[in-house]
Length: 218
Length: 263
Image (cartoon, rainbow over all chains, first blue to last red; front, side, top):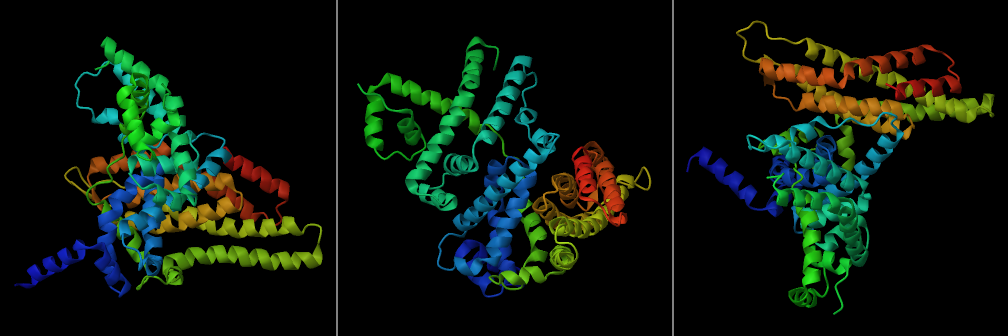
């Protein structure tokens, strides 16, 4: 077996288990933490983006989550799932960031301009359809704006509960730990979030469904 | 027939219902509740179409690149992270802010008890002004250089901006600390400009080391579109004026903050 093959095997061995990577990191192998960062960054980014609603804050949350994870890794030893653990750290930091952002926005006289990333990632720009109808574009843009507004109108706890439960599929106990709340209270928070979203969005969703039925939307 | 409540249907849909079997049984027999559940699902399905930007296949590596210099040799010792040079420099400025405020607060107690709170605030702000002014100056120079960067000739396919990228990374760490300090100090206008600057620094720090002329133009347009250079200059000039003023009155400070909020 040549040296290159040994390196590949070594990398694969690290990748096989988060637990091994954590142990190696704790033993002083800093590069082992790199494996954990590279493996979980995308998932943590997705959670952070859905919680904060913008890429700038999401990237800050990801970095902070892994930095704090590294600093607190000694406390992780008894736990079994690094992904869940770093997720929780990220969710907690995202809540702090959302609160900070709300204060900043409230203090500003001029409302924040829309994040350019938001435009770059507009789903409409990804649609390959060659000739979208003006009605379709208008309704899709309006619905998207309404969805973003409805999510932004949720409290931090509601948004966190909804994102973690609906989009990330986290368990109620896990969400409760982040919210520092009981299971029953967390279930109620999930309910309130969905109820508020429904109240805000159902008219727009039904309008779009009617437009589809009438053929003005594809 | 007693229908399911909205709460029960949402709990069922989100997989947190306690009596799932009972609700399933009811739904099988009740057309109205099925229709209600479908309305809930339609809203949730619409929400599922909201996109999450793809940070790119190299994102994990980028995160590592960003955080690696800030990690201590061994994890678990939280204080080691504060010993890295970048953090020390920025933390030093914040520490100076606190110590300065404390010392002048004590001195001012002896001289003028009535103006104690106002003096402390002024000194704290003056120290912040000096540190942030320097930071804004560095940021401005980097952004000006980047805005003026151009390929040396029409045949040049790529422009190396690694120096600006590295500086942006360094400035990013400082910027976060100053923004948080400005927020704690209640200077919302300064925090707001620093927040906007942070977005631009983040964009530059995440750019490739070598960019095509078109990519460079896109970065330059982004800087121009956000008007960040103008805002940085305005705030920096205002900070310099405040620094030069030996005895700023609380009312002057208030006016200055108000002006910045309009930037």
